[in-house]
Length: 187
Image (cartoon, rainbow, N blue to C red; front, side, top):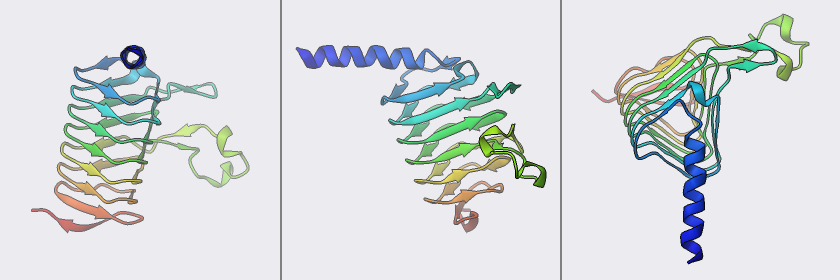
């Protein structure tokens, strides 16, 4: 009896969390806790799954500066636990993407890494975006990988565990390392 009540309460919490986003397709599943910040700028497709202790954040304001973020997640995207996706500009994740645990995807940084900013504490610097992140369909991103701003990852690419992606990765390629380089083409 108590298990049924616990599942009911948990389902209510999940629905409340998912109601925070602008658009959420059918069959969305999350394992709490999951945090959505700036949900009015987050769109999620059908068949979404997100593991626990994850953050998906669209920052529309930081320290008095306004931004116009957008996070668009396609259909059948499967995200494991402890991921962090952060946008002040735009992040697009295509259909059928698999994202391992501990992955970090961002389109911005604290500051513009200039000599004038060195004396400003990082948390007091304005957020700065070098460009959007666009992850194509059927991409697999391994555990603890990092996807940095102004990166496009092409259709069917594989990003190895612990890779740090700083430049575009073409379709049908495997990329590994820090910084990530193409180690194999899947043509």
